[in-house]
Length: 232
Image (cartoon, rainbow, N blue to C red; front, side, top):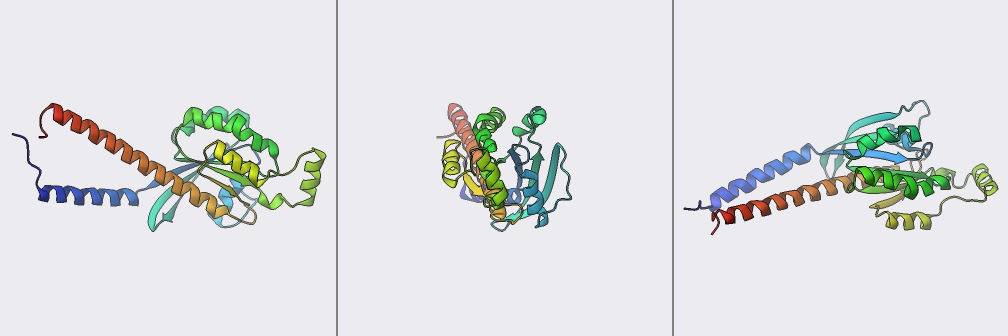
């Protein structure tokens, strides 16, 4: 005789699921990696964001991890910011971390067109070789330098100019990034937005992935139960 599922049991299960979901939200953790060419301002972004101001005293190593607690829609979320050196010699080391990252902040400097070109020629292939699904937030850094006369003269001598917003928007669509943001670690313009977008994209992706896995498991369970004639 197949087991009967009464309303009381279903209510208890629903309450248990709600408690579990609440506990999961309280334990939410997001792993965020900043990726991009060396000297585009990745470390400066993290330091300015964490300490609410720019400092030149911090010295980066090949791999630094910063952890902290933020609130997303009122729910406490532990965030882990992973800062990696962009130089080629650290490529293998970076690739070992990609699979465990929830969201990538992919950076180029607005006043370094080569770093912009490297997004598609270098960084996207590297990231997707190790992680096919985690969302990407594309970031144009050092926006405070776009009107710096010395920088503009230097770029003109190289027969180039700062990366235009429309170029970056096209790239955002091409690489299927969730957002594109231009920011400055020095002035903190749009800096908080970068991390807010990244955290939100990661949480949404993780919850969607968990939901898909749960639905897939439920579907397999129902198929198994039908084969055993447990369900009428």
